[in-house]
Image (cartoon, rainbow over all chains, first blue to last red; front, side, top):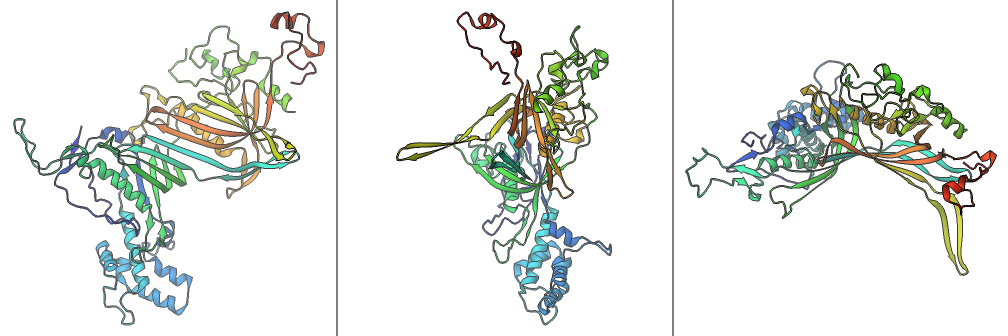
Length: 360
Length: 224
């Protein structure tokens, strides 16, 4: 059942940075997005992505002494701890007296970064545009945005999800007695996704027309059509996914617009009671004339860490060690054991001996 | 009949092929660093929920051919690597009372993870991760065992290289698994129709291959 106006707002990840080569903005649409997908299916098997703040920031904001809440003013502590030179002390002092970095709201931080100068009349020794104070505010702002970003649930689950585990090992070095096996462990798993958006459906605003009404013109784009793409819940949900790819959890240098990322956060995927934490390696989608009302996409995700949050199942019994282990009821795998069927005790050749003699 | 309904795997035990049930499971075992002793409990080896659908063995010779003015020179270096490729399905994620399940949200009480097929898939994945390696506390490999795969008389010792799990909308309620296995050593247990130490009984080959057959089909010295 299509739902009008109930999909999450398209700009709920507004402010999340996408790197120096990507800019986005939001226009106000005339109509309203329509979610034509089956929400109950999504509830039963949600496919969710989250942003994960960089490990370094977690450590910086960690407060082992319990003296108070961890601060995002980590640049100060990093400068103090790493370098005792006069310059570092000055920068540290600048940060510590710059209250907007340590305790500023998101709006204050945005203003601070946008203005490119200190917004308060602090110590007279500081000149406007101190780079590290700005950088600290830049980091703090993005930190807050990522921290406050809500999870993204895809309207339509990927059509295919393929996890590849690969060993790092070699069986190529030859010796006079054959190959030598060398093992170094395991590569990071790679997950390949391919999927599709839902259909592009948008609705016009205002009261629904009566059955007898003849509508010649709507207030905005409506209906199930390619033109409704940007107005549709399907595309807006997909654009959110694209934002996740662009961000990838990175803390970008939005002031210098450089590719020197300030910190590297991560993206987490929650599915099937497993959390995959890592990075989206690539992302592709195509507009196709043969399917104008939706878009197919694919992406690859490199896993750094995996967490299995499933509880141990009590519904699955352990593997029995012999065919007769469940024979109190004389049942085989079909539930019924035919009379006269031999059991393993009747076998004259145990498999262990059978193999062992050949291996010796 | 069982007192309560249960789903069972295709195989009851790794010894099914000895039980006259007409079943031949692919059996997986982990041998320790001596490449001889199983590190699994004595009476327990791993069998899958369902056997692989495809098990492809690839053998290669390592021969280098060099063209000279006098023709080709061939250098024979023996066997190249031997690989086994497996293609398999987990089997359906079937739960009692609800049937096939693709539910992944634990908030709904029961998920597809509580099925034999999923459980067996996780077992196989764990075996791949292990691969016979013995790790130290920091995750470095300190000793290397070997995986032993047994199927219908064939024994293959080696290691898994890769393991790919695919969930596809075109094949719901199950995973497709493909894996590659490098064979270090192969042991073939074949059948023979007569006692090689006593020679070939007269008439056996004639019965099997017709009156014209004069040549034994196996090495009478017991090459197997």
